[in-house]
Length: 156
Image 1 (tube, one colour):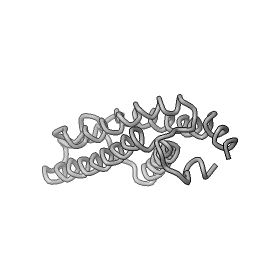
Image 2: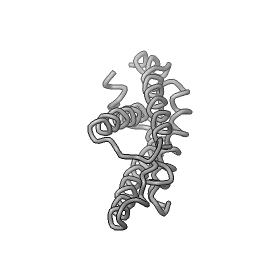
Image 3: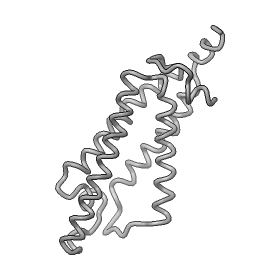
Image 4: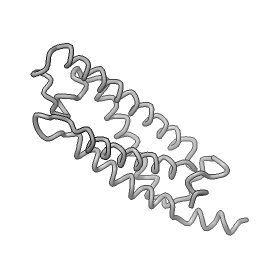
């Protein structure tokens, strides 16, 4: 199993189930889009998406939250760019990227449980992150199965 996540040869040959690859493309685009929202929106998505009551905070505090959201968006864009590179050039690493996405999802919810946000309403981002997390788990399972692995072991 570890050899499927960390292959000895990193090439553009994907050995998992083809549905995992088809699922990886929209997940990659979603990661890029979510990151760009945090960078490009005037409020960094803090109030418009996550329902943080920025208008009730002092101007400096609101600006700090917006700046932190933009920095978080930069990290999402960089991770999305790495996913895009894997999708286009190094498909043997798709299972590893799915594992990273699943770990990110699980750890994000763990941190959120320890340090919850005070929001004015239900965050629009929580549903999107849940979809990405579940889809990443399904993609991980699919990427670790497939005929390509059986063919690779028979050819040895």
